[in-house]
Image (tube, rainbow, N blue to C red; front, side, top):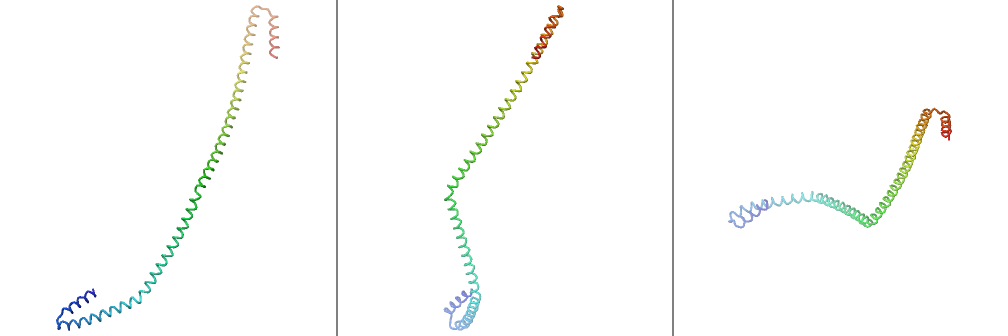
Length: 182
């Protein structure tokens, strides 16, 4: 705005008549003095506050540069670590697959062993059941045979009592008792 007023004063000075020129000269002198005082004040303020501002700004910039350098170094380190890990990734995958295969083989062997134990247990239980059933069947056969023998002896006794011949009856009874002991 001040420059605008100086520019307009200069234009008026160039286009003015001699009488106006004198008035303009006086006004222009005050404007020039006022402008000079403004420039001196502005220069003083710039000289007083600008170094501190620019030094603080420079320190902020330096700090930002150092931070950025630290971040760049850290990023490069991470990148090199990633590159190193990527280089050994194939070997790591191969090792993990081998470990997995070995673990699967151990698990398979364990399942086979448990299955063999279960089969042997089932066979043993089956043998025991068969033996128990055989023993029970033999006992039933013996019981049935004994019942049949008793029924046959009873029939003979009835037949013999029906004929009343006691001697052969006693001989048969003795014979049956002796045969039963053997």
